[in-house]
Length: 250
Image: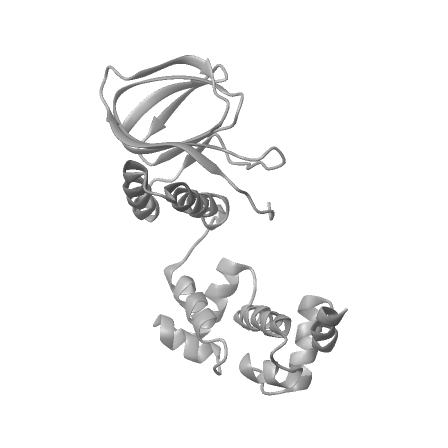
């Protein structure tokens, strides 16, 4: 899924459900996201019984049928709609175990939703997109590593500097030999490839601005050799930097 989505939040709530809480069986006409913060709940979705535990995330599509009850649960529920030509594809239940990454999003959405100041729908839409991005992309990675995360962020913030496996290992406080092997195992690509990818993506943005020539862009993105820059750009972008620069004049 690489296309943009434009969700419109129609309902938000952060609540505690006591044993009297229940949802009678009915069809929904919107997307429904439920994050179970504490406790558990028994749902029946399209006739299939599901038990949600703390840390689980429920995602229902329009035209789903649902009913539910609980013996006690704290949750966040977000209902939203998408334009006709847009869709998202998430599992009905995603075991997350740790919802700490979403807590600040819940806090900000609750703040905006309860005030309902001018522009709150726009802010809530932006926050929901961030939550969906985490679910669709960030949490889609089966293996993550704190050291690799530190290395990637450092590269993105220092792409114009001289970067080596040894210097990046120092940043992540790990052995240089282990550093390269760890990065490749987690990311399925080498550190060198990731550095070039970040630099070329930045180079493309600079070329699109029309403010710099090819040599200036190469220097600004950490390439000391313009010929290596040109060959790397063409390999990753499928077009030479000069042609990329000139395409804006067509």
